[in-house]
Image 1: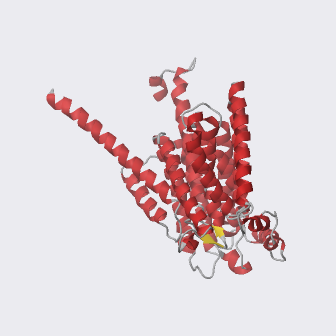
Image 2: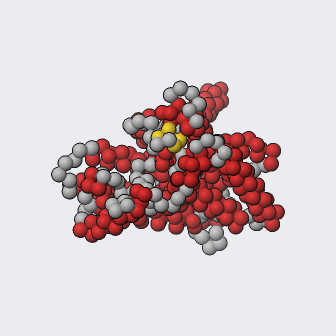
Image 3: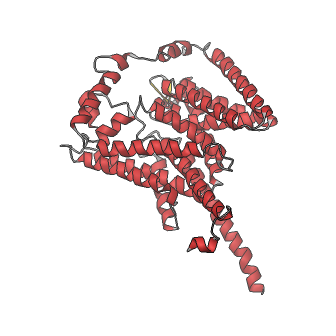
Length: 422
């Protein structure tokens, strides 16, 4: 009897310890995603080890998340087929290895969140911490706050701990949207605590001078506000959403007016605020390459090989759909298109259902829509946070699938659990 009484507490302690270690491991992985100054980044090395260890100790892929795995693997098979069209492989095997690795990270995040929904809150908290730190680095670099701070800038734009401001800015959108959600729906006394990191992240997005990031944040914020308005059952809650949105916009406008008074900022903002830049409309500019590339896709159904387009025209595709056609062939293109359509449709179907994970799904979903929209004008193929968004959304899809399965026996006329199990 005494042996049993001692065994149970020890088992509970071990289970709690394993839970803490696994949660800390996921936290560190998300935190490292904000620091990609060189490649392979610490994130890649760490996540490769984490996924391998988790797989050894029982990583389970939900049946509902299997389409994510199948479509991402099929997309990469398209890339391998496209590689056979190349005369010089160069760094292509490494490029496709990264593509496949990122696909597995999406499946990993979908699996762990489906198995342990409490990880959603931890993941978003880790993302916010990482975003605030990398934003501060980018802002410090832009203003040359300390010797050597310019390493956190590129093209006189804040890049944080990233190689490219056009990736740094979009990376900050999800944590910004999450903080905005908490600001709109959380208790009033907590608002100052949320406003400070939100302003830091918003400043990071602004000083990246990425038109795509600006547009993404604006579109995602509008979608978030609209969804909250529709979801609110009470008139008071809707009124609060409207009032808080107006207050947030007013604060943002005031901050913008102050920032634009700083030397050099107004000029850079004016240059970057145009919808079209010279490299967009030039003879072989971005838009011209779109037409040429889609014509080439009709002539090369297997693609021309990863990164080959850039060697021909001196610039990459800057369009995720053209990128798929050129680098992954029609097989990769159809797989990616199917994945995006499936993710949007399945996510939308469960978007406003009252579930513990719904706030995280909502924020990830509107940010994903923004990223896909931006993908029409820039390559998002190897953006780590896009695969994280896929994982977060498919994790919620898997959770809803399990939730519905648990409800079925309770429905009138449904067979008893024992009969259904047979």
